[in-house]
Each structure stands twice: as structure tokens, then as C-alpha cells.
Length: 336
Image 1: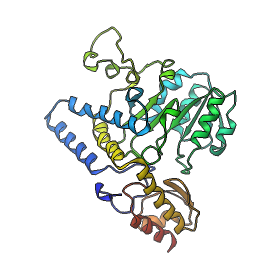
Image 2: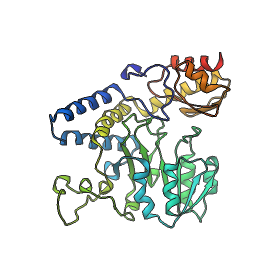
Image 3: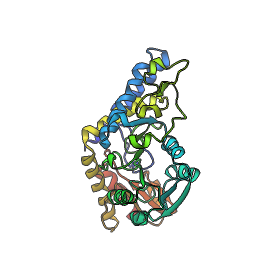
Image 4: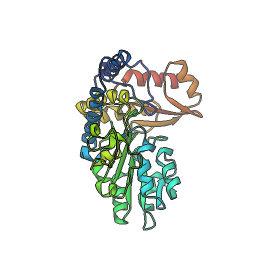
């Protein structure tokens, strides 16, 4: 993996918190900000990046762009799904990140289960299974195919949060009814870009209560006055995008495509396993690992290593810009 495509300072092992922008994404954003500062151009050029990012996301997860809406955050793009499923019964992992939990707690009845046992807990009492493809807290990779098979066998919907997976873990978005992704982690976009695949069969049950001009069939003919004229596809659930976020998102997602998700994943997991081996831990299958190391926070901070540390438990995450030198520096800090 060519680390020179980024300007990462040594020691960043925290992509699970936020990803670092590729140089081309950062430069695109700086050019946009320069134009905005002096009023050099109109907004239409910036908005072209929204369509590019939508298309790239659709290709990355194997769905049609017409089935993808754009938004700002995961919980926001999930809101119309929650409204459509109000009063239903949801099954969610016990440690699920709350952006994919609170909407269901608001909407209906929630039952939790250990993430590893999710598939076996699906039964006829479950209307929808909502889970992260990769768990934020532990890095555990879900049994995607197993959960989908169990849900389909019992007539349940499948709602997937791919925020900690999309960009390093290949998966088929078409298996689910909903796939949501915050773009600012493994897709390395600015915060404020989020995407959702919404299966057509589910969209028929959803109402775009947040519809504005950008949800129109022709956005340039949707500025003023009735009648209602929304897009016929998933764009009716778009919110007006933050242009800086999408100007940075488009080149970042396109670079992920160029490098290949499988190649990025192989790189990331190899570095994660190098880190685990250095701590005498068995290898895993995730780009996110958590380990208990006494005094970890002070040791890492002293060495200039940036990773998430909670009560002595290290959560380290490795991505395309991470190098073996980064891993070895962290190991030296934790074992010396």
C-alpha cells in the first residue's frame, strides 16, 4: 500500500475514531474552501461531488446508485426507516453503537443478544435485525451471511451499519434491506457525509418527512412552490448535502475503489495481526483489535502513538496509510 498518497504523521492507529484524508481529498477540499472564501464560483460544481460520492459508494457495496440516499450522519439516514417500522420488534447486539440502537429504542421494542449469537436468536417474534458489520467496541466481524439467512428464514428485515467496515471489508450490500455508512472513518471522508442503501421494497413503506429541495426529481426545478415533486428513487430521502464534506468524500471514495477494498483489507488485517503477534495474542480477522495492557494510555502517549484507550484497554485500528513502522513503534511502547 502506497502510504505517500496520504500525509499521515507516524503513530496514527485510530481510524476507528476517524480516518485520515488522502492527499487528493484534502487538496480538493482546500480548493473548494479557497473558492468559497472569495466567491469565485457557483455551488453547482461543488455539488457534482455529491453524485460522484453516491456513485462510488454504490459501486463499493454492489448496489445501484438509484437505491442510495445521501445524508450527514448514520442516525439521520436511519430516521425514516425507524418511522416506517414504528411499533415493530428489533433484535440488536448488546454492545451496538447507539447510532444503530437509539432509533430502534425510540421506534419500538428492542431485544438484545451477544453479537456472536445474533443469528441463533432470530425467531418469528423479530421484525428486524439491526447490527454493525464490524463492532466499534471490539472489532468483531459479524456473521453477515448467517444473520441474513436467519432473518430471511423468519421474515425479518436486515439493517446493517457498515461504518466500521466499508472501506476495508468486502461485502454484498444487496443481501440487506438497509446498509448505512458514516463516511468519515474507513472511507476517509470529512465528517458530515453519510450514505444509505434503501432496498426498493422497504422504500415503499417509508415517508420522506425531511424532504426538501434536494429531494426533488429535478433539484433545479424544486426551489419554490407546490406541487410535491419528489425523486422517484432513493434520492427522495436525500438531505441537502454539506458541500465541503462531499467535495472531500468523492476523491476519497474513488481512491478506495482504485486501491481495491480487498487489497486494503488484506493490508489492514496483516498489520493488525503483526500488532497482535507482538503482544503474544492469536491472529484475528479484523482491522480493529482490542487488548489489555497495563499502563497503556501513558505508554502510548509518551511515544506519540494515537490509539483509543479505555480503562487500560487499547483499541488499535489499522488502515491503508498505516505502516509496519507505526505498528512496531506501538509495540515498543507497550512492551518496553
